[in-house]
Image 1 (tube, one colour):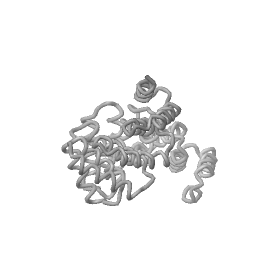
Image 2 (cartoon, one colour; image 1 turned 30 degrees about the horizontal axis):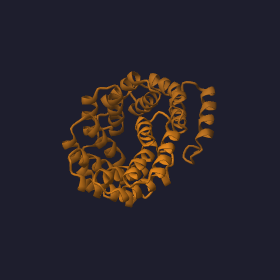
Image 3 (tube, helix red, strand yellow; image 1 turned 120 degrees about the vertical axis):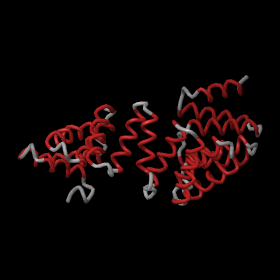
Image 4 (cartoon, one colour; image 1 turned 90 degrees about the vertical axis):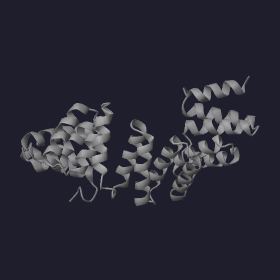
Length: 275
């Protein structure tokens, strides 16, 4: 009941008390692990979940949550073992396939990770966040062409999901289709005006297209949402330099370096400005 109410700290404590009475009670081990995962304490969650899978190695759900805890604790080999076993016991367990794909990508096995992602999201476009992640992975580790086509279908299925619009826009940029990419970035920003990453992508595209005023507006909106974006400050400074706003550009370079003192583009840009 406490877990369903969102009181995960209280739930974790209650399950710990139950385990003091019966340390081998698998349901309590699993529930305590899930509560600790909800509290973003995966290293603590790992202990009861590993014990639960030892007691009930045939339970795919126990293996999945143990794999999640291991993955989020950066124990990738252990995560891969648990998640592979979960998929073996239930080949239709989409969440386990998806998490195993993330583990393989983190291990550097990009071909296996992409294959698992494709299988996990195939026919499951009801989970747009998963599709957005899969599309982004296709772009980063696979081929931009098929990745873009994958995302195009996803956007058609979920036109109101801004992150899909962003990822599809990035695929279009990679394919040299800048005008279409601009439409996708604008759509993402319209769906979520506080989507700073989409505003930065739109600003970068406008700058490359020789539209500095439009670029400055998009970057300004991004920085209103997140003033700590070093790349947005730096890009804004470069735009301001093209507009002959040297004093504004210097302030933007300073803001970029305040957010990230080692940001090379900002260091080089300020050095060039001060010559």
